[in-house]
Amino acid sequence: MPHRTIRLLNRLIRTCRDSEGACRAWSEAAASPELRELLTERGEEWGRHGDELQALVLMLGGRPALSGTPAGELLRGWVALKTLALGRGDLPVLLDWEHSQRLALRRYQQALGERLSERVRRTLTLQARRLSAHHHRLEDLRGHFAAHSP
Image 1 (cartoon, rainbow, N blue to C red):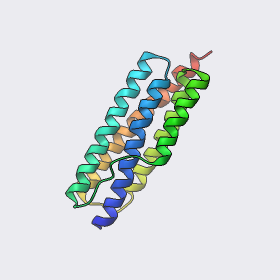
Image 2 (cartoon, rainbow, N blue to C red):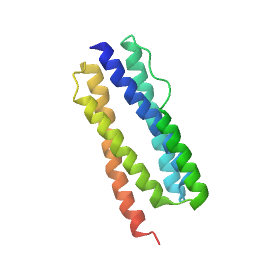
Image 3 (spheres, rainbow, N blue to C red):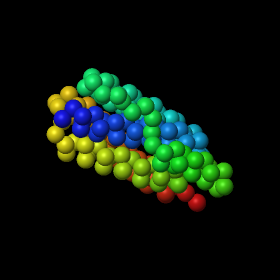
């Protein structure tokens, strides 16, 4: 079980690192200072989630993933290119962010469907709850920016 759990945690660590980097890229692409600040805060939170998961992997005797995925790097490059071509914009950032958060939440839900130790399950459950709460706030923001978009 520890080997399988370590593999699962490393997948989530990569998700956290991808999300952390994506939040930085989206922060650069956002037009409003409020959204840029929110994205910066969320990126920092993703970093803390990844750190917590790395500690769990070490506790289980494994080698934790240290970075995200090539797809995450590609996404950050795409966001930078799109911003360069189209300029800053809040609604496109929110739509991309919301899609990414849905995928991350799905990965957490899949992980929670596995057989896990109580310690690992507790950590993943807390992180998933925070992610879900942020996702609901993100849906509200999208509605706000869509209503105020030209």
